[in-house]
Length: 598
Image (cartoon, rainbow, N blue to C red):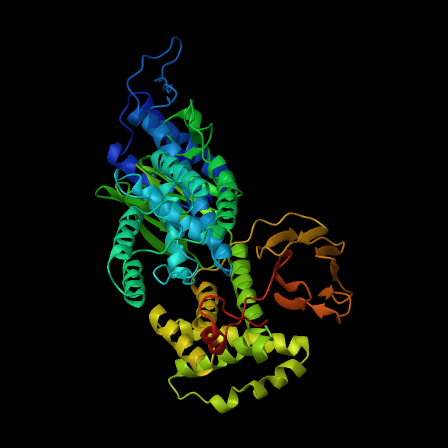
């Protein structure tokens, strides 16, 4: 450290020479080389602070307009005007706040679409699809608004997580601009007022049917002609759907309100005090990076490297862009890219960071590794719960085994997948059955990683057809596994507590476990989670043997499936019901009123 101390003192002397109007010993190039070396050096915090103080004076001298010395002072004044609301720094700060909000909003909207995808009739997703489409149509005057589509419109594929992911992305993109937000609100209001606006061709159809009724034809020929005319036009929607769609529209609006309320407000005085490392203005300049903070904003032209949260961070300009290295990860940030594309995810061995760029200002945001791991466990638990559904002789568990056979490339061994083969599942203890189902989920997720989405979808549908199950069952299972692999859900931050109440919304709640037991209210049933004398976390429910919660637990209760996931002291809990299991036989009986078995 004596070596670095001497170099920092040398840098301070050289900067002082420069400030007092003298050429520093070794010249300006020598000063610049020494500065670059020190900015990359592994300095102790006290020495780092001294370096930052000297470097701030150096940068102010390099970038500030000439000032007259104050009386009694031989050196040049380091005062600069404070940033104004329309300065480059203030604009960059506001844009970075907007980008951080947009990243959070993107996660929240994705979570909503994942939740709504678990609904049997997709009411919320159909509303959202219509709102997005009509909001985009509002930007093209003269286009007709879209009516809310039917529940199982084949053109939408709302069971597909990639489709719902695109819906979430389209919504968050619209919310990024003031005009987009206004169009979303207008479209949502219109859907609530009239979910099924009158189609412009309805009058044409009515006129043609009236003309057909006047034709001198037999009754059978006239009815055939009218049926043919109706087939050319969209059928009118059942007015009994309106209340459910309007209720869904109100709920969508209620859930979007807090996202929009969190939108950052414009600032009058620019960046807050001490908020930007290497800032041009002393008022907003940060002395040293705060290792306890979750984000760091840097003025890239003010330096070339720093150290934060144990990571070496270096950057350099590459044309109009910035090349940034955080630990072992290298990325290119493009200030000229569209706003949504100015974010890059940096995956490090023990954490993830999001890098955001605005002009020459960069913000690094830490994304909790604990939250990511808990999200993966939550998605695995949700897929496991599907396999534990005993309906139609554990049809979903048998489907999972059949799909694994298809994905292995071998012939389907249907003799091992009969309803009689499922008796052993009903006879197994809950812990053994859970372990078997979870292993099945993990096996299928590993196989999905080697297939395209279309190949995987076809494998599940082929397996379902062989077992006499409707493709909707295959699509539901494929979607849950796809999410577990590619798009794990995000749990809300945990807060210390000893009470938790769950409702059958399917969403996860979070709590930080204390030494005291945690009481979970699940409908009329109470569940207690507490540490035992061996240091294990035990889950106790009336009528069931105590179960140990290691990282994941799915317990079947009369009111639904209790999903529990844990990472350290952070526990997530959700209550979800069984989705209907539809057989091909039931579907063939009636296409309008499919019989479901639970």
